[in-house]
Image (cartoon, rainbow, N blue to C red; front, side, top):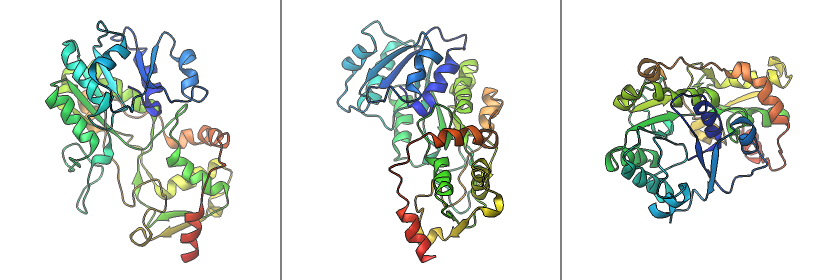
Length: 325
């Protein structure tokens, strides 16, 4: 099941893997086929079967989902789920069906590093097992349902802050360009030295396909962080974006504010450090690490940004806080 932020690049990677004979994408039917990445499916990942369905329909049962997939004979050895937010509706039905197939070799689930609950004593980067997770989170419940209730060979990845070409997720970096383009100060929570990992979706896809070549190790470890170790501070992201927009570093207006007093003010990241380590994936799966970096990608990102519609942009909250500062 596909979230297009990752799904498009993932399908491209799977198409080149020797273990994958064919690819079927279960795509939400409400997507805009005239936008990316959907309009590039046919050209960039040919011979892929795309099935459109209402993925968010919570009334979906096993019989209906099996029919959508192609009938009683439709079975899959490798399942990638980067849509589900919890075990209900189609998400639950797919697991229940897969349990009965008796052919599933890997059930790879794209969870979220947002489940981590760091404390004041947490050491960064956060590693698997060293930081508590929010057990009530939908993704945590999904992990448990796949592995324990359905006894499927789960491999679960925890990504954070993804960007990429032909992606429909732009909030993180657009936040900086929106304000730079409007000539407004960048409201960044103090002190601005907090670190963040912004990961290209191609690197995420490379990590997601790594279990195919290390199935036993992947299933044994089960949980993997998913992110780059090429870290940036919040202020460094601001300066990178400014450079791409042709604004000198001296002319970048940054207002560091009290997160304790004002909250996030629509800031796209946490108020504090919040980043993970991909070291486990490197050790167990042979993952080579990120080949991309925001510093290298920011120029094409800015060109794509300029082409997007900004008519609904609302910066009024920024103005309220700036007035108080």
